[in-house]
Length: 525
Image (cartoon, rainbow, N blue to C red; front, side, top):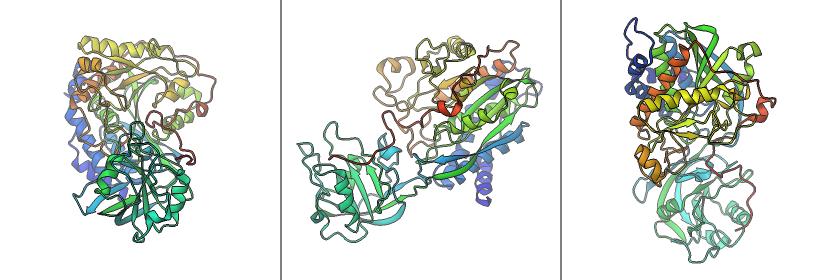
């Protein structure tokens, strides 16, 4: 606990005090937008980055990094005059169980390269990633090439790397072995590596078209720690060597800790406003284990904190409740726990929910949740009628600023999901994740075609350098406008009856990269 207080205290010292709103200023959109500054948001982002760096390299729910982030948000909100509370719960950390940010770093034999970790065995973007169920490790050892074939062999599935005990002949005990896909079943490669005396193993694909994506398997029960690496990472580590020592040493650290962890949502409520008419403004505060998550979702969390600090100075018609959710990355568990904790009488008081998850993507677009379902399939149970009104609130604002937008699916994949399941109208903004930006979108927003909206989505490089301040400025103005408009509204969006499906049955899947699912036991070549 002392460490958590120390981390949060240091972050508080590093943060810039919130800009002052003019005493007695009116609560219109323009004045709130002027008070909510990019500088103020980035100060909170810097604090979250510092917490991540000083903790485990991440802000994963249930870890010191998350707990310090929650303390930071709570202290800042309380200092601004909001009423702060928490909503504790326990969750199962399983699929994304990198408790600490993994490390793969060249320490000698070449440039001291730090490879970029990614989730799901680096199947999205990263240079490497821990395999599901791997043993933990923290070693520095030489790299051994087990009869690899780089560049890619001309014929797929012609490589015999790791298929014979002879591939390890002469290997120093405890070395970290490079194993390439090909010929024999993966299970054979794993079994031979187990008896080789390897201290760790790095598996990579062959490299021909269609065989470049890193390979992610369930390695539960194996004694050798396994990671998946990209072909590019393997090429650098191999150093031109096919068989034997490559001349490079690396530090290899993975801390895989599945289990049940306590965590909490942070709640901060304005003192003014009708307590029977509540606007919830939400963002998830946790990151994945591979990094500090400064866009995903430090951006939404920091933006909401800046809005909270400024709106607390205003006299409001309706109460605004800011909620920073935990364990979103494990499947919306924080928002689900929060909605489930509310008695029906309290749920009925929530007039609308605004959700802000990733609002500063470096190659951004301006996406608005498709609350009227005119451009996307309906979520299970449909969308509360008032969600269309919230979408129109954002669309009218952007139209007034002469800024183009696009709809994004209203599919319940973020923390608004449990709210719409309970019949509460919702909406929000998004600047894009792993999807590729098109030339048509470049014409609307600028940026680069053929590149993801967030090239560091769910990776270790999601840091302060991974933000578009232009996108953040535009989205924070829109978020502030929507928040104050609903906070001062006399007529609020119409509600719907809660859907029949229980919340647990409607839980959205963890936000893994597209096409990535829980790994099965290895088979085939």
